[in-house]
Image (cartoon, rainbow, N blue to C red):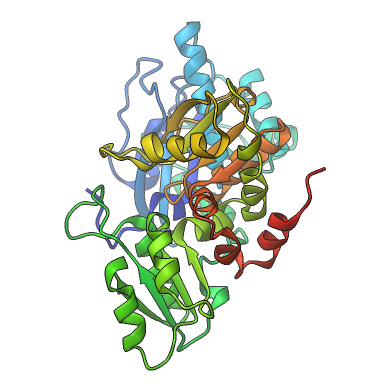
Length: 413
């Protein structure tokens, strides 16, 4: 079970291992980490679906390894597995392409490396099982020139060359972290920030949900002060403060009451809107909300959650959002749902996508989802943006973010 001190999966440096069946991807993960993380076998195709393992890898820190199915998997089921392998690329900060040294470089590896270069994903190539065959430095350099990425030889079984593999991981982990802060750029040291955190029934006892944890951490790292209260205590909390907060951040589902109890001069927004800004594209999410009013009978809406959880009786994604959208648009609107790592390939079939804040997804994945929607002409919005819009307080919730406010004022082409 995850605990409060663990780095969320969506904030970890993500390393994917790719290659043909029986190239030794799983064995290589075990050798790199010094742990038996992945199941290994001489039988090709042991790894079927992507396997995620979060851990600490020094000197990088929190990482997640993703072990994938073989690029040469066969049959209809194999084709689906290969599709899932390619989907993993959307999450990767670094790709390690693995090949059996005896088999050499084939079309599978060449095509895959070209795809990595096209997507601008840092990568390097590992010839595994070098205990069974040796390669000279000249041969390795020739392969590097052919592929256009660094090439090393290693043996997962003997440990030879694993140090060089780790060096390449460290070298390629020194990427520029351009992920915006959640709230740190809106506040300064000593500021008071009030967080309104209704106790979510989906959260285990004794724990806050992830967006609340991460926002508190960001506030503390900014040397500001986080004050946490429930929605029914907000008014008393604000009246008790000698200095008014510079910002109130609320769970979106308490927006209406929090708006009523927060004086107009105090800026107000939601956790979900903050995550839309940090991981996705808040302005694009704001533009997407305008399409909901124009929905016609028979049009389809896709509701996406980046995690899976036990559904409540009045679940936000399954019940409340469809109800609000039908109230706005009227007519017979059709709804479909996706959750976890799954993101449908046929998103062009939908008029609007309504996405959660994406706290369990990394920025690369969320950026892909927004870009893919934009490319196909599909409008996309966010839970928090939708809720604020429904309750008539979206302009106020966007006021701390000028670009998003301008997007709300844009006239339709």
